[in-house]
Length: 310
Length: 67
Image 1 (cartoon, chains in turn brown, red):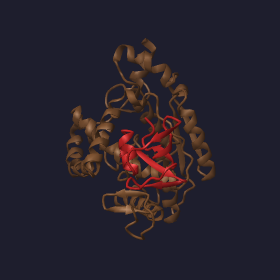
Image 2 (cartoon, one colour):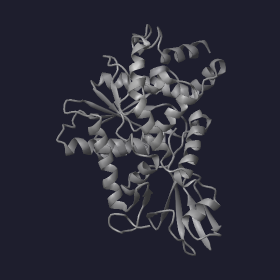
Image 3 (tube, one colour):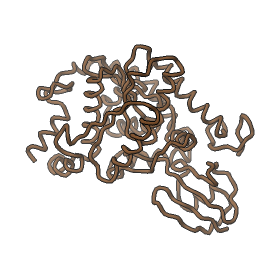
Image 4 (cartoon, one colour):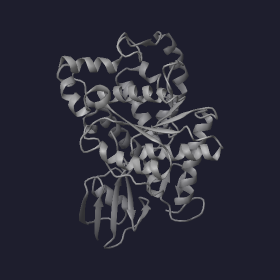
């Protein structure tokens, strides 16, 4: 296959045609920069914290956010990479090593926060105890703790935005998962700029890779020669998400544009979901930790309590 | 034709007797969804319609990572 723009050998076939290495890199970067601009994800006065793990998505978003700041003469001195060490054996240590090296090379300070230090347990230790009574999957615990720590530490840093590496596949999966489980309320928090209401305790999360597929993102890291070792979370196959992911990939293979179609449809109804979500009640402060919560006790502290009783 | 394939995810290398001619044929034979991988030959990423040659050495990189 030849590039539709220059006739060189193509590296990917997209819906609108095939692209060579150089044209793909320009296409990908332009798409990310346009997303940042369209949704006003980054402004001159923002202090930015990038949620990182050392995987392909977070390294890409870290690199491109930094490039965007440079391109637009926005000061990058306040940029901080924030990583959560969940405490998953034979997994996170590898990606964190890649991340440390990457941050050093690109001159971005890195802060690593661990579940063990914050909650007294690694995910490996917490999961069997919490699962015994609640039947919670590791991804449920991991997701709650990760969001809690990212928000808390980004706020401590004085961040006004948390940039995450969520891509088109992640978002399409989340939309479908919420539909399958009738979680309309959760869907209102999705979108390129997350959150429903502005709140002092919440740092707004933005997703510059929102319109980039997982395949495009991996290709970008390969062509840019970022050091990304293949690692898959040992718990990934246990999750509901893995089933939805496989289903969507099957659909995408048979019917090109499925994932983009899901996102376009979702974006068309998102304003209505956000409007409806305004009625869901005020955000409270957790009585245990004083972090934001929907109920009297936040979900992170509920898991902590389950560990104490288990 | 005979080709050698290194699988990144499994960290294994296998000699494969390919019954078809293209990357698409190979992925179909291996029951791999093209949406989930990138195929590399001589350090260059190639598209699914690419025709393979005897004794080609390929790498199959997984697109899916993380949790």
